[in-house]
Length: 181
Image 1 (cartoon, rainbow, N blue to C red):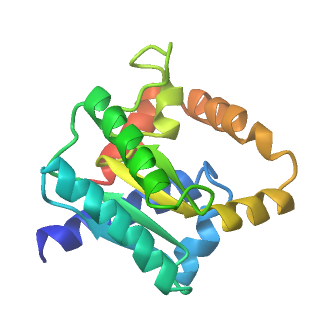
Image 2: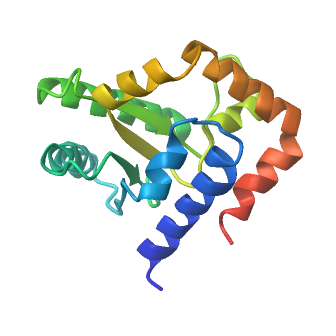
């Protein structure tokens, strides 16, 4: 099995056993089950190429209505969380200049994700911790439609924090670590 297949298998394990099993994203199960999530493993550490590939994946979403969303995975770069956040800001700015503002939005996931003001070992950080640094490209129209069907969507982040804190640090850490097997 190639490295790329192993990485995608690990991300799928994370989606299934963490995100979907604990309902951290109430909209992920449908897309996961229907196979409408595209997984892209980007091995280059070259910033300009990474940004070009983010734009290219938006263009691919433009052309493929069967592909609901894309997870761009960076297994060989962006390991430092602050540098990753800078990259997400740059990618968002590039999408705006490419005319994608209001069409796509980016969600961020990282193995060292840490909410501003949260302790490093706060279990709530695990709502956005993933096996590898990732950017999730979401169709804005789909997000808006999904939020209209979900009661009190503004409570999702608070609920997720409560879930991860109830699970506890050891459990959420073990769930993430299990994805590497």
